[in-house]
Image (tube, rainbow over all chains, first blue to last red):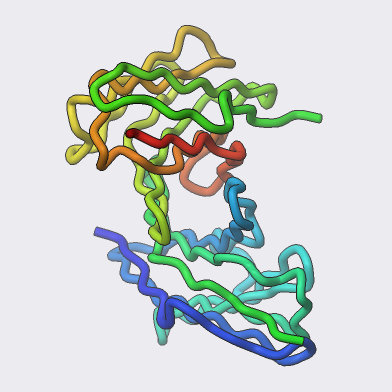
Length: 113
Length: 113
């Protein structure tokens, strides 16, 4: 069964610093991978997704992620953090033949001035 | 704008008093999902509809039911809410899982007293 592990329930960065949120997946077949962001008291919004095309995926708000099969990873990065990036980030995985996503436990990003 | 709408945004109910949460969509997506998200946790899938086909998760309590009278609307019924059902309930839609994006509504925050 597919699953994702997000290392670090909380990540703190300074404004302007690199953002790195880690996600490792487990899947018996080529996976489809997603990053969603959730602001307080709101639903989830897609940042980016990997569906077996280019391994470096660019998303909204300057975020990108790289699919690395050898490391079973799909880490999310942003070169320069902004205060508005403070939110909860969820990595999720799915597989062909499944109609649902499996979410990781989430990482809360804190951005300080 | 096409979107996913949830009503009400906030609901307070008493222990054991039935409650119904509503989700509607203008995206004309054929798949609709209901998630439960407890505080500081990942969304947990309760069930989903693929067109009229209902798919229940194995660990979803019998207390939770769902109805989809047409493509646009989906309801979550909690027959006898317990204190442990206090959570955010998220509705989402998609067209072609597993690769398609899931679009989330803003959620209904349910409090059981």
